[in-house]
Length: 595
Image (cartoon, rainbow, N blue to C red):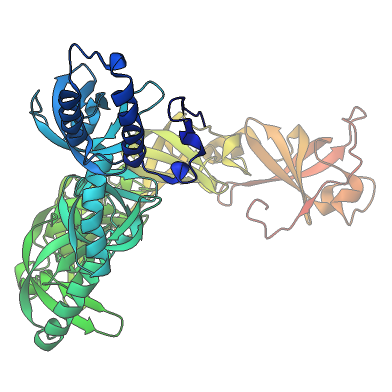
């Protein structure tokens, strides 16, 4: 600390034992009292020509009066001298002026020079000799006392939600920022806090720390107190099956919470409408007043179940009379499953079009190939079950069944041209007209050849001429013949291959009673095991021959009725294809491909 020595008094002010503990005002008073004797002895130092001792004394008294009430840490009145770009210059009656950032005067938009403002005197002088002032701290000190009283007396205070921050919301409490934790905003989690910003509410102060300027408030405490009082009242009034009004408080994916007057009840999405809805917002909006029915009350779990559709008439009553079997109806597709589509006939009433009832002719793999959500369709009522709340519908029944007129359109023996759509192990499916296929069985593919697989005769996509063999409208089956589209060669085979005719052939299949030989021109003959070896006896065809083996044969018998040629082996040519390492398979005589 610097010291000041007055020679005439021979006194060092800094040496005074209590000087360091004095306030600024006490220091100034002490200095003036010690300077007064000097002024009496050395008047030349005080411009005697301008001021007399009495005038100086009066001047000092006037100056002292201006400093009488100025103390650091106190709220003082100030006068606005000037408003600059971002500063406000203030006079508090001290020897120097003070400035405060303009942003601290946000609550005084009409501030102008000459206005009087209360500010906090933080320091009489800073390093530059200016007074340090703060309006924000003055506001805080004034408000803090009111906040403290409210906290200690457990009184609610009004505040405005200002902005959302991590963990909660900033609340403007009489101009001072307070923290509202997210868990203390409402009784339940608030899905969208932004909707509450700017609104005023009452809060309870639950934590206060002046040193850290920490204020924590709660709205939930007030709501819980209110709910407790209203709950007690509602417990006496509320009853099951009661109809009363409520206001939509919150909406979730599974329903809406309804304020019944202090206690919330849940209106589940399934109890909003007899019809199908995808989200509660289709039926209700926040703030909407509803008339609802109390379905159930559980005070222990604090759960109240509410219903809206229960106030509407039950749509399934007398539905059988309204939608008799055979009635043609219109509806909208509201749901699609793997097994069919649900059609809304009216709110609360839906019918099912099973996948098998969608088309007379198409093989529908999934309902989405025929219909789509939201599509309007026509259907026919097939069955009604009021007890199970089920209606079976048919889309294909809105059109005439083409299978009914097929026998008239394609009598047996009709020759038509079709396209091979699919091959199976037992035959080929040929499209007769769009959506209608007939089957060529493997046995009806060739007059003379034992076909083992349809691919030996036709390929997918081939256009073929076929003959209608049979139409079963009830089971929706058409039998087609490929070989019947040609003349039966067996009527002339006896003339072409008389008994005794010698023919070369190739083994195509081994049977347990002989072998099948390809004679060419899609004609096959059969060599019994007894006629295989002209030079000896054979018991197993696989011991003597193999598939693709060449043989010279002679016709023993031609049977056009049973469509077979019986042969005998006359000789075995020397030139043969390689014999396979694995013996050829021997088929049973009962095999449908055998003789």
